[in-house]
Each structure stands twice: as C-alpha cells, then as structure tokens.
Image 1 (cartoon, rainbow, N blue to C red):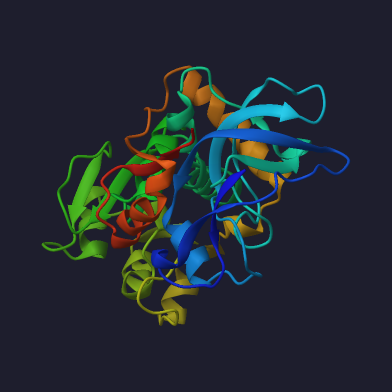
Image 2: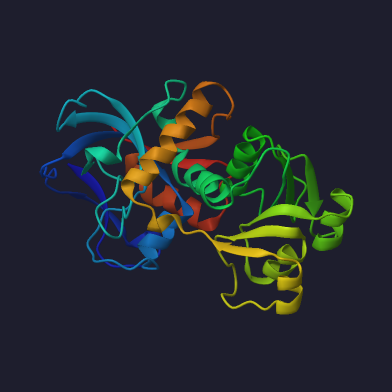
Length: 315
C-alpha cells in the first residue's frame, strides 16, 4: 500500500511517500480502507518529534473510511481519531490503517468522507474538555481564549448545543458563532468579561492559548469558576496570585486528549455523530488535497495559513 512516512523527525520536508506492506491483523483488529484523512497541527508536531516515538512512522490522527477486513463490521463506514496514531503506532495517512475493532465509530450519515475526517481532533478535544472534564451546564457562561481556532470553533458549537452562553476572546473580529466577542487588541480580558457578565465573571474558561493568557483567563472566573488548560503557547511556566486563586474558590483542570484510550475516543465520536446527524453541528470547512500533494498540505497546516481543515483524499 502507499503510505506517507517520516524516517526522521523534522519539518514537513522530511515526509516521503513509500510503498509498504499492508498491515496484518491481530485478534480483535480490523483493517480500514482510508477514503479521507485530515492534517491537524498536532500531526505536524508529531512529525517534528514533539510527541516522541520511534521512526519510521506513518502520521495521521483523523480519518474516515470503510472496514474491509476483520469481523462482522466489514462494509461499515467509520470515522476515527486514533489513540497514539503517528507516534505509538502507524496512523491514517496511508491507503489502509489497522486498529482494534473497539476503537471504531460509525460515520455520521450526514457527512461525506472528507467532512467526517475533518471533525476528529478539534471536536474530540472540545467535547472531552467541556463535557467530561469541565462539566459545562445549561445557562452557564463559557469563555474561550483562542476561540477562532479549530478547537475554539468546535467548542463554541458544543457549548451552544449544551445550552451555555459563549464568549470568545481573540485578536481578531472574524465571523464566529459566539454570543459575544472580545477583541484582545482593544480590551483587557478580565474587565471585558466582567462587563459582558454583569460583574459576575465566567463559570468556565477553555484556555486554548495559555502562556501569557493564563493569568488574565484565571482572573476572568466567577467565584467557584473552573479553568481548563489544554495548551501553553510561547511559554510553559506561568504565574498567578495564589491568594486570589483560593479566595475565589477557583478550580484549575488539565486536559490532555493524547491520554484518551481508543475506546474513550470512539465513545465521544458516537455522541458527536448524533449531533451532526440532527443538524446541531455545522459541517466543517475543509480544503481537499490529493494524496500525492500531502507534503504541500502539511506545509500549509504548519504555516497556520489554512482557514479550513486540510484533508487528504485517498485514491
């Protein structure tokens, strides 16, 4: 089969197309013919070596395809976001991928293969953070920093689906589905959040920036508010006033979807499927690339230029 491989870690330029053996199945596994596979920023980081793991390796977390071998699931249209794909095991940027049958989720009927492949990591992260970790409730207020990125836009849809109010903070006034937008180039975040919440503060913050935004996000919480940390751009070490933190009865929660099992990811995708099929969630914007253009597609993702998700279409 054809596969995209990295035999050393580095920029997208280390990626090469190779003909490799189609993987054999172990007990309980299935073989999926890949029809489409997304390229996430995390895939670029995996190729760079940030996640560790042995090489050579096939990258690619998110995919959609058809089960062609394994068990009674043969012929099933599936989507997935593989646990450890690209660093602990070979991923989906290939003609086929092998994985345990328990990791599979049926693709939403309302989405094409390319659209389904574009959902994975951002929506899995948003759902896990807001529902499983943050316990976001109806009529609560959610603040999202970096809210115009893929995870932020997914989180906006998840939060509104749950009946929460959404405030997005970003250094842009680009179109979005939030109830309120705070332009960080013009406003102080804690002050703007207090103004938007009638002095209360936000119940939950999904901090998709971290670094210099960590303390302003923390200061935006209402009494008893929860802060979800999922990344830290620019700097890993942060400072905050510990007395203010405990007097406010704040909670700090870490979210790392790389620690989710394949079964946990499949369970989240099962819940997402229903929301896509009933029209609660929008179809993702995407840009399609032929598989032989994969290196250019990776470069596009690495540059941050893509306004839509880059998706590889397999022959």
